[in-house]
Length: 169
Image (cartoon, rainbow, N blue to C red):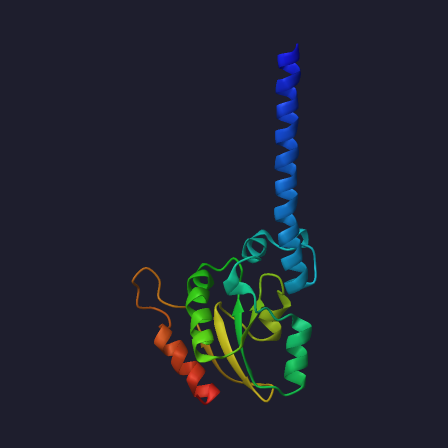
């Protein structure tokens, strides 16, 4: 009987430990979701939840902020992506280090969460990189880096050229 009580005690302790670890990891996701999206992680789509802690997806802009920047006639780069887009998952890890290398701030707009953005900003495909000058779109690059040795898409050199052309560096 004592052995049974010991085994049950161990099982209870394990379940409590698993619960606490799960709750702790969810709290990290909720903190990131609140910081980036202003909502709980549970309100985000699963593909977005997976990216909450990814360092390549931390420069998010929400629709209200984007509209404000356009209305204020600011000049900036914007990267439209979908958290569930396979091409974006290949392209983003190339773009983020490149923009850091060049000292350029490129905001990210998640079309999976902000689906009104497709029509509102005339986005047909992801990824799409846009340069806005004085609040007006000047140029865009559509498509990501070539995948699996393919030749379709934009090379890192093309992205760098796009950044330099519009950033004056």
